[in-house]
Image (cartoon, rainbow, N blue to C red):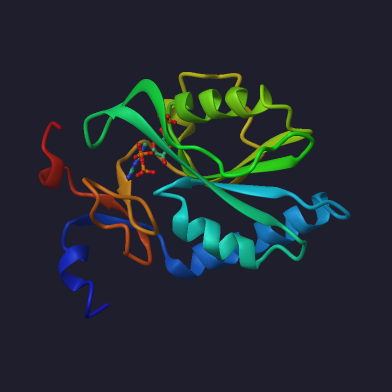
Amino acid sequence: MEQSAKIYEDLDRILVTKEEIAEKVRELGQKITKDYAGKEPVLVCILKGAVLFFSDLMREIDLPVTADFMAISSYGSATKTSGVVRVLKDLDKDIVGKDVIIVEDIVDTGVTLNYLKSMLAHRGAASIRIAALLDKTARRTVPDLKVDYVCFDIPDAFVVGYGLDYDQTYRNLPDIGVLSPKIYGDK
Ligand SMILES: O=P(O)(O)OC[C@H]1O[C@H](OP(=O)(O)OP(=O)(O)O)[C@H](O)[C@@H]1O
Ligand SMILES: Nc1nc2[nH]cnc2c(=O)[nH]1
């Protein structure tokens, strides 16, 4: 904790420890390995927040997966998404006939994933599922969105760590914590 002690001072509390994350990610990797037996799924990492989850999850899946990356911008302030989604970096390969797993760090309103899922479905994927590290179900405004794999249901609080940021910082915290409102005020 020495190296990150200063950053930890900005947290109200730790919500999920790195040990709990590792255990759930391992379980999820095993489940995906079973569910996709005989297949070669394409794992799509949604930059940047999902990077740590993605790299850990990949290593827990015992199948010949391929990896691709998308960057999305959801206009808004540092703590609130706006509902307007723009693709900043698209996939490198086409996904026609592929079994796609979208890997996200967090589902909040669901607007981003709803947009992404329908966009990728229009490209002719054989199947599309969503794997999310965190789900804030209380905040959902797209009730029909199916999140196929979730590691943790979390309360409605702004969280950082293990890939999740506030204004591009805190992504390197090994645990996930609730950011103190004194850091972001009313942004
Ligand atoms: O369910 P929603 O309300 O649409 O919110 C979820 C989105 O917000 C976060 O991305 P963010 O814009 O913070 O980008 P980042 O991954 O680069 O941190 C997260 O990675 C999802 O993409
Ligand atoms: N870092 C971070 N990004 C989010 N995007 C939507 N909800 C959150 C959250 O709680 N934390």
